Image 1 (cartoon, rainbow, N blue to C red):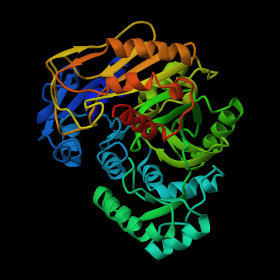
Image 2: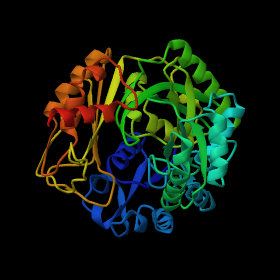
Image 3: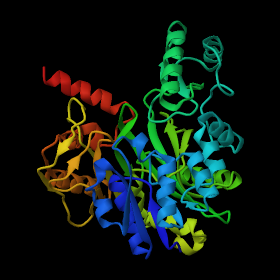
Image 4: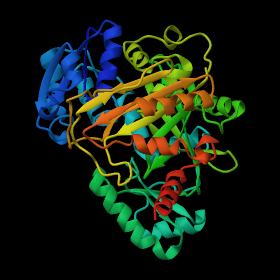
Length: 453
C-alpha cells in the first residue's frame, strides 16, 4: 500500500479521499489555493501545501504547481478526485514521468475515452450499442447537413472533447443547422481548446443511465450495476439514485457483461462510469465514459457495501479485484443522492458568502458528504456544490421518506441553497412514481412558474 498520497482536489471530494486514505493507514497531503486556506481538507490532512491564488487555473489546474507540491512532500501517488485534473491525460503522463502513481486509468486510455468520437468508435467495435451518427468529426456545416439527412432529424451536435453540456446543440431541421453548427464549434473551442464536432441521432426525452465499473491492473473488470441520473438541469445532474427502476435484471446483466468485455480489451484500469441514454423502448445507447470517480458514487456504495475510493487506492497499489471485492456482488435496497448547491433555488444564480449556521441531518441510512461548516466561507471561484445528501432504504419508498426527512433537517444559513428545490421535486407526482426522463426539470420548472403567475 502507498505510504503517502497527495489529494489534487478540494471540497467534499478531497475530504472523502482523505478519509479513505486515513482508514487505510496512508498519510495525506492536501493542496489548496489561497481561498481555501481554512478548508477542512487542509485542516485534517497530515500535510498541506498552498499552490497558488484563488482562481483554479492558477492553483488546482496548475500542473507544475501540483507536481512540485508532490515532489516536495515526497508522495507515492496522487488522487485527482473528480473534475479539475481527474481526466487530464497530460497530467497523468507527467505523474508517470515524475515516478508518481496516478490513481486512475493509464493516460492512453484516458485520452481514448476522453475524445468522445474515439470512445464512441471503440464502443461500437466492442458491440456496445451506440446511437446512429457521423463516422468521425465533421469539418463543415455542409458535411454536417449531409450526415443529418442520412441519420434523420432531430440530431445533436457534440464536442469531440466536450462535457457538461458545452459544445452541444440540438438540430431539428436543415434551416437551423448552419447557425447551430457555428455556435457549437465556437463554444467547444472556447471551452476545451478544440472545436471539433461529431453528430448523433437525438433521442427525445430519454432516461440517463450510467454503469459503475472497477478494473484492476491484471486484466479483471467488474460492473457494479447502474445509477439513474435523469433529474438534471442543463445537463447538470441534481438527483441520482440506484438502481434504476427502468433497468431489468436481464438488461443489467447484458450491459454489464458487454462492458466487462469491452473495457478489458482496451486495457481499462481503476474506477470509471459508462453513460447511456435509454429510449422509450428501454434500449440503451452509449454516450460517453467518465474515467474517474463520479460525484454520485455514494449511491453505488450504499447498495453494494463497497467503498469505491478505497477500491481505487487498492487497485492503484496493485491489488487484484478478487482480493478487494466480495465473491458475490449483490444489490441491497435503494439509494438516492441530492446535490446541495449554493445557489438560489429558483433563479439558479450562485450564492457565495459566509455560512452563519450549518446543521447536517443524521440517523440510520442518512449520509452527508461535505467540507462545509458554520462560519465557513463559500468562495465564488469554484463549483457551487457544497454537500451531497445520500439516503439508503430497503426500497425506493423508504429511501425517499428518509430523504424528505433529512432535507427538512438540513440547515444552511447565510447563503441560498438548492434544498427548497429538492423538497419541491420530492413532492412531484411524476418523480414519486418514477415517471420521469431528462426533460423532467424543464417541465417541472415551467409548471412552477405558471403556478406562481
